[in-house]
Length: 437
Image (cartoon, one colour):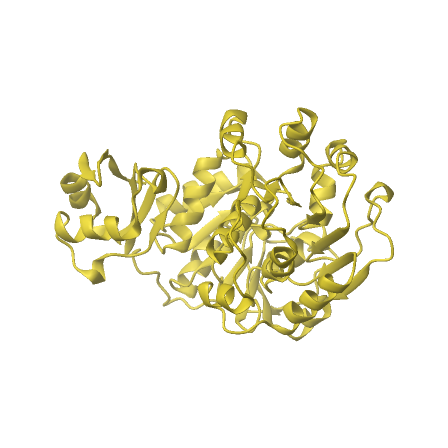
């Protein structure tokens, strides 16, 4: 049974957020006072918190069944929302279920029924068909990134999910783009729409074109990355083959990076994001999968190595930088005789500095085969590294603690030595493996 929900300010304090932005304040009031809400706001403006705060306030602490359903287009977004809810410390249980992991794992987690269920259309539809939990108490339905979610569930999964929800009294749709039609079966009657997309026009995003002397843009990309130094950024490509080709070239040039695309295993995608967030790499070479719906830090720049096919993808890519009040730059690399799509406006051509150079990456990431389920805390991990690893506080980077494992950032120069010292040692009562990823 859930504990009584804490006051909103307690939740914000726990998240280290000191005030809501105007969009979040208006969303809070609108969602509370309307049955159906559409929230349109750019990537990175805090939509997740905007719908979670009013959702938590509406849950019944005495109910032991699922009360709210959040549908998302990707496993990364499901995990991210679950993580945010856990950090809010509301006392309500939330679980994320998604493709790419076994149904058995879902079943284990669902034995202790969550108040909030987050999932992707296909996996949710499967659980609904098998009636693995009751849906009678689900009163609130949220579809995050609804334009993509409806597309992902277009094969019938989304319609099937809706057919199992007879008692919905509140619907909330969010997106960072405008214009997507809502299927009639969703019954989104007379919604109140909050449109903050126009705010993006006032953002501090700069768009620049870099000219490549040849059709092959690899060397120009390396020159641009050297010109930008060690600031974090994303290199966007359209295809898996392009990502793998660029990755191999960057390896030859000894430029630290990691990749992110739908063809990768889930565990590899998760590790790529962990390394980006803790500073072990500063460059992510990615498909449009990284343009939204994943939890990554503010990017100083993004690079369109290949231009996207549609304006929506272009907008979402650009939305990964210049978020909220920050400055950022989107670079377009233009190959010899390449013609950009019509939706890309003329951007200032910038000449690259020939003196720029990226510094070697400082951090590396260590994997530890123990996590929360082993009663291991971040403090336990820090203690292991200080005592047995014999490092100082400046040498301990970000600790990312998961259910069954942990990831720790340490200086690259001592990573291998730490593995030798710590591998097969005991952390709490568990013998853990330690390795560099």
